[in-house]
Length: 230
Image (cartoon, rainbow, N blue to C red; front, side):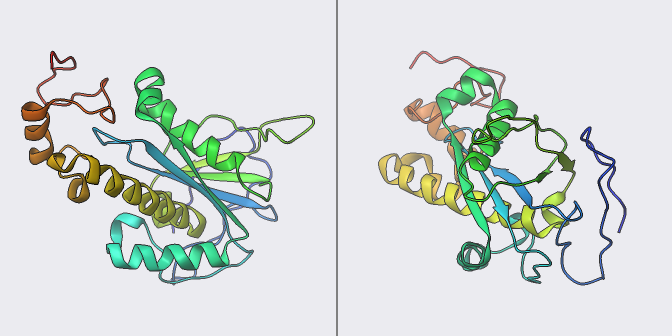
């Protein structure tokens, strides 16, 4: 497997564990308590963005774990139970549509990951993140906070078990949330599209207007229009 270039300033202590041809890699940092992070809902027109942080046991293996987008809904929920049972620690962080409009979706996605990390009952010594953007994270419980070493990994949810696990938790908990919102606003088809910009979703916006859960800073109609007179 191709080695990823560490993108944090803490590079001297990193070692990359090569795959054995089966399953995903168990860790990136050698000899550290490592948390994997991923988000769900970044590209949606409505709803909060969710993120998860997961610490798995050292040398943990589960050949069923993969990027949540590569799994069926049924398998994702099956794996959620397994992840929550097996993880050393796990947590989910949420950033609301109002916050997204205020700080933008990139900052909101990172904030959701920070909020998930804040809730972990075990403090990580290193962090790996799906994608290529992250901001330094310091534990709020530390008496002398300093940034925890982190590395961003493009398509990390298909390479590392903890990131894949985080992607599954973020996706399933956000789906549960959107299904609840769909009961309040069934006309937007959120049970099916989960807030993503489908044709039916945008047609419903044109016909019924916005809900309190829509991200008003987004291109909601797909035509560059960001403001509404509903």
